[in-house]
Image 1 (tube, rainbow, N blue to C red):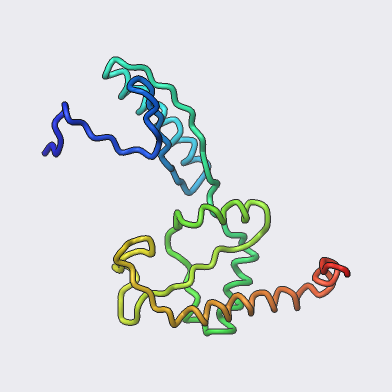
Image 2 (image 1 turned 60 degrees about the horizontal axis):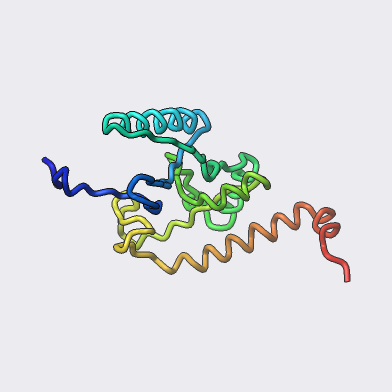
Length: 176
C-alpha cells in the first residue's frame, strides 16, 4: 500500500537540503562490530548510488562511521558485577542478553580508559522490562526509588577502586 503519491514525495533526513540539485543526508548508523560496520559502509554506498542511478542522478557518498561501538572491558565488568553482588545481592546484577546501541558518547571514554557501562534498571514495580516503553519514549515511566541505589553503587565502586589502588590514588592526587 502506497501512503504517498510519487509527485508528492516525502523525504526523511537529518541533513539540510542545500539546493534543488544538492542534497545532504546525515543519518546515524550504529553497529556492534567493525566487520558489520564495514559491511554496512559497502551496502550504504551501493544502495545510495543505485537509487540515484535509477532516477538518472549521480550520488557521492562520504561515509563517516561516527561513534565507535561501546565495548565494556572484561576486567572492569567483573569488578562491577562483584560490587553489585556484594552490595545489593546477586539477583540485582543481570548481564544483558543482547548488546545495546545506546551510550554512544560513553563509547569514546571506553575507547581511552578501561571501564564498563552500567545500566540502572528503573522499570516500574510489576512491569515487564521487555514490554515497557524505552527511556527515550514519551510513554516511558521510571521507578525513581532506584536512584538512591544508583548513587550508592557509584560511591561504592569509587571507594572500592580507591581502596584497591591506594598507591596510585595518592600519586594521582593533586598537591597544594
